[in-house]
Image 1 (spheres, rainbow, N blue to C red):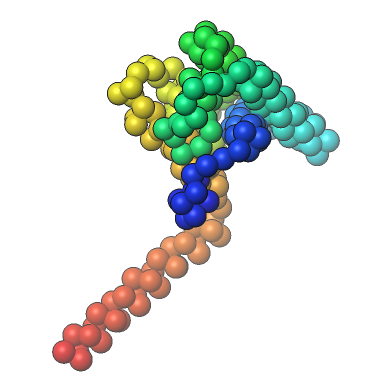
Image 2 (cartoon, rainbow, N blue to C red; image 1 turned 30 degrees about the vertical axis):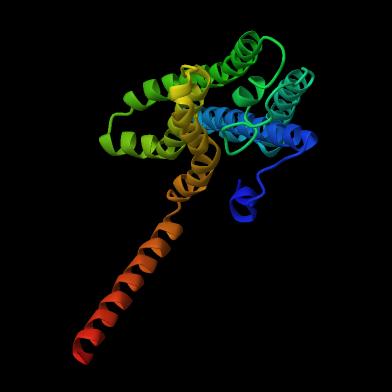
Amino acid sequence: MLFDLVGGNRTISFLGRAVQMYFSFLFGFTHSFLLTVMGYDRYVAICNPLRYNVFMNTRICVQMVAASWAGGCLIGLVVTVTVFHLPFCGPNKISHFFCHMPPLVELTCSDSNTLGTLVGTFCMAALLGCFLFILLSYGFILGTILCIPSAAGQHKAFSTCASHLTVVIVHYGCASIIYLKHKSPRSSDAGTLIDLTYTVITPFLSPIIFSLRNKKLKNAFRKSIGRSMFSQGVCVLQMEQGG
C-alpha cells in the first residue's frame, strides 16, 4: 500500500498478488490465534494462579506460539491456493488498496458467489472458533472475578484483561464486518475503509494498547507530553515577549 501511494505504480504481477494475499491471511489469522492463546493465558493467571507456572511454562508457551503461526500459515495457504487455482478472465483491475479476497474472486471466470461464500464460511468458522474459545475463557474469568470479596481485588484482576479484551473487540469486530458485510456496489467504499481499519489501524493500535499496561512506559509518556506542553508554553511566552 505504501509503495503504491509513494511510487504511483499501482500494478502488481500475478505472483505478487498471490504472495500479498497469502501474507495477509497469514498475519491476520496468526493474530487471531495469538489472541486466543492470550485469552487462555489470562484464564490460567486468574482462575488458577497457583498452577500458572505449570500450565504456562516456557515449553508450553513456545508450542502455543508455534501452533498459532502454523495455523496462520495453513489457512493462508489453503485460501490462496483455492483462489489462485481458478481461471481469471475479463477485467484485471480491483477497487482496493491491496489484493484482498472478495475483489479478486470477482475477477474469476467461475461462479464467484459460490466460491466467495465457501471461502468466507471457512474463514468465519476459524475466526468464530477462536472467538468462542475467548468467550469461554472470559466466562470463567468473570465468574472468578465476581467471587473476589474486595472491590480492589476485582479491579486489579479485571485490569489485567482490559488491554487484551480491547484488542479482541477491535480485531473481531472488524473481521466479522468484513466477512458478513453485504456485497453491493454501494458498500465497496465502506468495505475498503473497514479493510483498511482491519489491515493497518488494528495492528498499529495493538502494541500501543498492550504497552499502556506498562507503568514505566506510561510515566515516560506522561513526562514526554509534559515536556512538550512546557516547551510550547515557553515558545508562546517568548513570542509574546518578543512582540
